[in-house]
Image 1 (tube, rainbow, N blue to C red):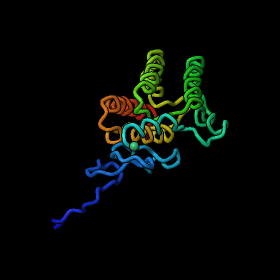
Image 2: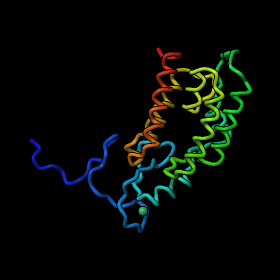
Image 3: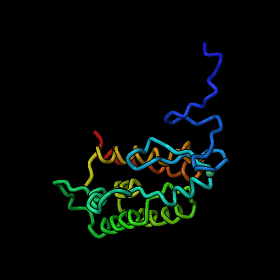
Image 4: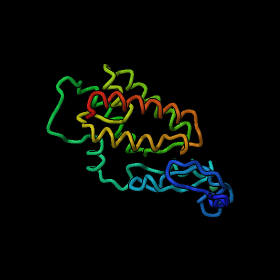
Length: 194
Ligand SMILES: [Zn+2]
């Protein structure tokens, strides 16, 4: 039917772009191949940048920007009415500190390889310290107990979007990360899922 395809690229959610578009950084003439969310509250709305500018943007982008200290705190540790006595407090204290430190220095989408490597190394250490698959999965999803399935699902969706290869220029590391995230989600689904 549709013999004449639109000359405009479809830029809808989850679709790779097929046509050139200029970098959204004012005055930059390069192609905008990399997308970055416009803000924490609009993770599905994107700027399109060239590699240099997406790196610059990601360095300065702070996931927790605009949140009060209290909001950051409750994002890291949600209050619920129940506790699991088997969870080692010291261990989760360390994980919370990691998340807090990261909130303080800014949570990038880091195409910046070095920033991501540092973060991954820190997280890997925490994963090694985990005693069960469930604990490890929570670390991968950057969660600390107590959690419920709603929260796990919400975080999973958020991280799966962030690390989706389409959004990371087909980056191998992002692909690996997405695999880990999927695995962690499946583990937690088995523990908490309906
Ligand atoms: Zn640019």
